[in-house]
Image (tube, rainbow over all chains, first blue to last red; front, side, top):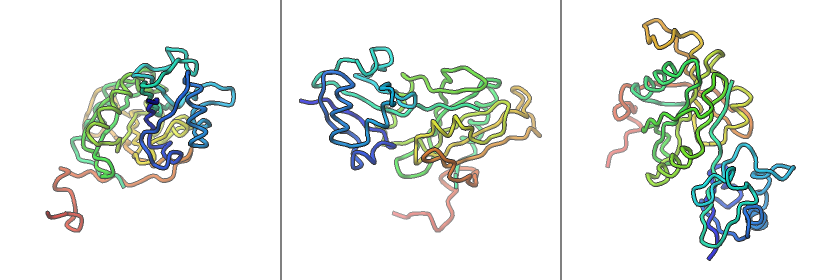
Length: 92
Length: 158
C-alpha cells in the first residue's frame, strides 16, 4: 500500500501527464520529498523557499484541508489519499 | 476564441450584478478537451470582498471532485471587478493556474446596483493566462444556443 496523490492539470508536466501518483512518508512534508525524488520539480511548485506550503495551492489529506491539520507536519499513512488543487482566487 | 451561449453569459453577468459591490466568482464546466462551457456553477466568494475573491477550500474540493466524476474541466473561470476595468490584475495573473481555462472578467463599475436596465454597459472580456502572463485577450462569441451555434464546418455527423 502507498499514499495516492491526485495531481492537478497544471502540475502534470512533472508527472508525465499522470493524474495520480503514489508516494510514501510519515508526514505530508516527507511525502512531498518522496514525490519530488520521483518527479523532480514538484516540491518547488508546492513549497516555498521558507519551507511552507504555497498560498496558491490547496492540499487535502482524506478531504481535510491541511491548513487546519498542521500543514506539512500533517501525519499521513499508507492508504490515505492526498489531493492537490490550485487555489482559485484573485482580486483587483 | 470563447464561444458561450446566451443563457450562461447572462447568468454570469447577473451573478456579478447581484454580488456587487463584492466580487462574484464561479466556473462554467464542460467535457474535458471540448472547450465547451456547458454547466454554470456560481461559487461563493469566501473572501466576501470588493477587492478579492477566493473559492472556499471545501467548495473547491467538492467542485473538482464533481467535475472529475463527470469527466469535466473548468472551461471558464469567471470573476467580477467592481471598481476597475475587466482586465486581469496582477493578483489574478499570479493565481491563474488552469492552462486550459478561459479567464472571464466582468466589470460592474458602471452598473447601477442590481438594475439590469437596458443601456447598462457590460464589460465582459476573456483572457488566456499562462505561466504568470496574459497570453491573449480573445474574442467572445455569444451564441443563442450552444447546440445550434456551430458553423456547418464544425458539425460532426454520426
